[in-house]
Length: 189
Length: 189
DNA sequence: AAATTTATTGACACTCCTGTCACATTGAAA
DNA sequence: TTTCAATGTGACAGGAGTGTCAATAAATTT
Image 1 (cartoon, rainbow over the protein chains, first blue to last red):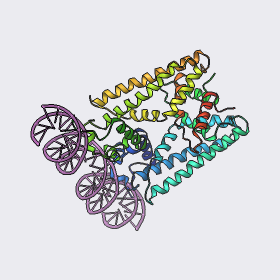
Image 2: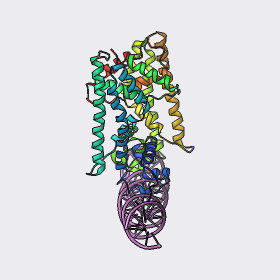
Image 3: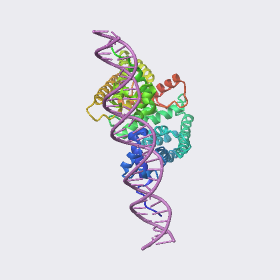
């Protein structure tokens, strides 16, 4: 019962994401979002106490979508297939890493909802890492990964690689293929 | 003649850098800088029209320091030595990449000094790339670099690697060594 | 010591964002 | 048709940053 909403949660999060990637956490304001969505700014306060709460809630939503896909990595039997699949989903959501860094900037001082959201998000992030840890462990067990290299560095390389600017706009397929090649065997011939 | 300045340019840029890395471009304000430096906010307006002008000027200063070091790469005769030297200076100034990205956010609409500064900075950035291009070309000529990999990706890998978060705080020397190893030969064994 | 020059500052007016609230709107239930 | 609960909005007060300027402070020159 009651009035119909002017926008769905999906729409809200879609615009939030675009704005966040455009202007960053500090630059993000309810005013901009309201203008973008053609809605009164006051409306948001019916759903969120403040921008921290909106952004942390958005990030949980975003991370959830990513985790669902990431979990499927376990269904692949060997390291090679897991690696292929992992690169695919990472390059399908190149912005996840950037969004994680933005969320790190959220300061939640008091005992509010944003604080709880941040804690939940932290749990999800660790969940993500543990999922990836299994991947690394398998790779080292199968003797496919260089055991000398710290696990955290292997993951770091994989995740950072999506952030490399493709200045010359090489075709996506070729670009991703090259990145896989370099991550696998390095830049030396 | 006249009164003595309360702070040097070096001090100003030092604090600007710290603040920028802490709060990002959008979060940076003259108020914060003034408080940090224990100076009146109004003082800055004697030297800069606005924050865009300060930040672009700072970036030129920063890039200059980096370019001076980078130019020396040409004094090394072969690829191996150039590679070693390059990694050293990049890890000595791990923040240069981050600062470049921050500067990209500066919007200089009108025909002001910030606009000119941005253009000058862009020149320096291209200068940087051309310097690195020589390094790549030498590497491919000496048949040390994988000729299949796009040049821009090789540089991207090297520069992005400094941004990989060292979550477990592995000792710097070991960390850099591992990164060199992965850049060179990849994560596979 | 007075004049001159340069640096610094507090205060003011302006703009933009925030959080709130009473009031308006809408759609479904009674 | 009336009622009512959920949704949406304009307006207001408060806070923070901006850019400016007249006044003040400190060095140097005369």
